[in-house]
Length: 115
Image 1 (spheres, one colour):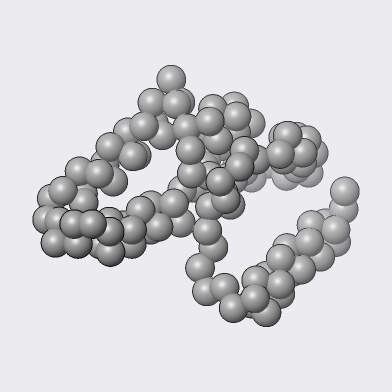
Image 2 (cartoon, rainbow, N blue to C red):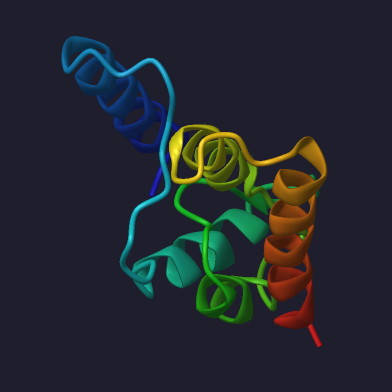
C-alpha cells in the first residue's frame, strides 16, 4: 500500500461524506474489520509517528480489538452522539449532572476494556 493509495482513499471518503451531506463523522455499530489490523501493521513500517485510530470506535469490543495495535484510540464522535441523545431523549429535562454521570460511565466502560 502506498501513500498515494492512503491519500486517495481518505480523499474519497471525505468527498463521499460531503456529497452525502455529512457534517459530523459517526461511529458505526459493527466491529471494525481485521483489515485495519493489517493496515496498521503496514503503517508501522512506514512511519515512526504514533498511530491513533478514531473512526468507528464506540464499544468496548472495539477498544479490546484495536488497543494492542494502536498508540491511541479516539472516541470523540461516540461521546458527542451520546451527549446529543441524552439532551433529546426521555426525560428531556435530565440534569447536567445526570448527563455527565452517564458519559462518565460510558468512558469508564471503554477504559475498563483496556485492562
